[in-house]
Image (cartoon, rainbow over all chains, first blue to last red; front, side, top):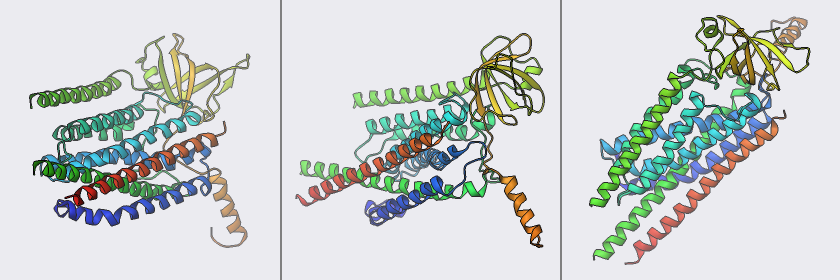
Length: 238
Length: 150
Length: 43
């Protein structure tokens, strides 16, 4: 992990990797979405609306995964003082928030023709909305309290404490009576028929690659801004 | 540095407040009724009469009946433990059907009938293509005709 | 209820959001890295 501590080593890998993640992610996402629109059958109860799954589920997983990444990076920043950790956490926040918002909006759109409602305050929907609020708070906090290197202790603590919401989201459908159904895919079981399931892993990989590409681009921008600040300060002091 | 110190303290307080609010929301969700009650809870008398609430279960096959006025429907909700009668006047969602899950929003009457003013459909975690069983059956028939094992 | 308007809306919002953030992040990165190079060169 620590070979990336020197920004030049990181940039040496990030620069060539960024277009691979960006273009590769775009291509896989396009394949997954086109497959989901034209190559899969409707669901016997939900009809054609099941196709929304291919955008809703990967967004949900990445929205939650994003905050998990923020929590891990915050831990590395606070405990191991990894110099890139704070920058990584800040870079993940906006894409994480976007995927969470996409999950909420596509979920609402899916709920209207199936459940018959755009929104209910059940455990799953409410905890996902809380996640979006946490992201917005984190972005504001990190932006307001960033030091010259782009890091923030307060934001790191927030990132760690907020992680409690992730298992709450995951187990909400088991702990409480919710409108949202229980998990279809777990480590031990899968209740999605293969004819409907197959574009989902493609969508997940495509979305994840786009997520990774966006994070790398945002990290590169943050590091460039830190370089500019340091250079300007050195020139002013000289 | 004093002002910056104050800003940090304020930020921490704000953070604490956000987290506290979120936890409050979660515990409130947990303590008050979950999104819905079940027919078993109604049978055990755990459900208050004439209070706005939701009742959810599976629509008992064969139980949907339309009243003489042509608009009101009656059906039974079950959770494998007990059954509760529901009366509803209005439009049901497309996914509302017998053998499928439903959430009724309304009030429990003193006569034990749940009077709903809104019906939501609830589906489980399974995803199947249509005519799964008939596709499998026609495969078996085709194999039998060709004299090979299905 | 015809589900296709809902499907189109969900896909359109997803694609717009992803494309928008990808392009915005790319533009911000190019701007910042170009400025960093310019500052580095200006002794």
